[in-house]
Amino acid sequence: MMKITFYGQNSLAIKIGDIDIIVDPFITGNDLSKDKVDIMDLKADYILLTHAHQDHVLDAEAIAKNTGAVIVSNFEIANHYEENGIEVHPMNHGGSWDFEFGNLKYVNAIHTSSFPDGSYGGQPGGFVIEGEHKNLYIAGDTALTMDMKLIPMQTKLDLAVLPIGDNFTMGVDDAIIASDFIECDKILGCHYDTFGYIEIDHEEAKRKFYEKGKDLMLLEIGESIEL
Ligand code: NI
Ligand code: MN
Image 1: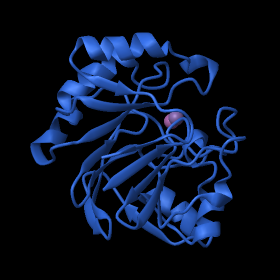
Image 2: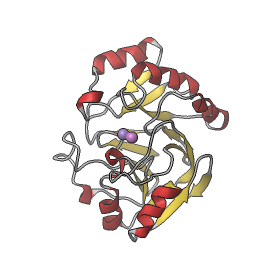
Image 3: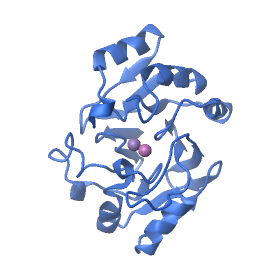
Image 4: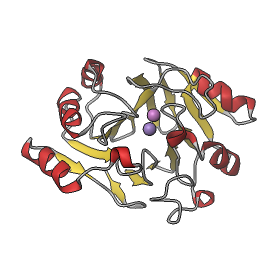
């Protein structure tokens, strides 16, 4: 069983068996989620960070220190947190590792990755998780890229978390093409509505996916789905 809970922007909690994973925690700085979620209530054995932008890492250190979770990210981001006394697992693009929750691969994304203070956060990425029974792609912040076509050559996805807010990442139309590239028609939308630049029309977005025979899910803050 894989349970995925949405906490706004790209923030997710994923439960695989009895392992708790937090992805890109940005909650205390998000007007849509800060009054609905207490980060001190979140359980985490691992925290996956796609890149170093503030809207992905803001609460990572606090959650790691509260839970003892291991931060998994690219080499530069892992080093940053290790210097702050947090246990880390560094990866880089194209690399995979067998964790206790399954195999995790750090895959390409086209975006940028500076920390909020401007320091170097390596190159941005996404994650492919091959769990015991279900496979998940978390694209992170990215443009539509041909590299997405590599994913289904190795992994049959059950669900993909794709950004759909446009301006900083793919918008809805490019995310529909991405869905073709990764050969996955079940999409959880993320990276929308948090700021003025990325507000979207939910019904129009869902309709566009539906017209292509695809399912776009847009969850409320704190809402979960199970695979
Ligand atoms: Ni970003
Ligand atoms: Mn972002």
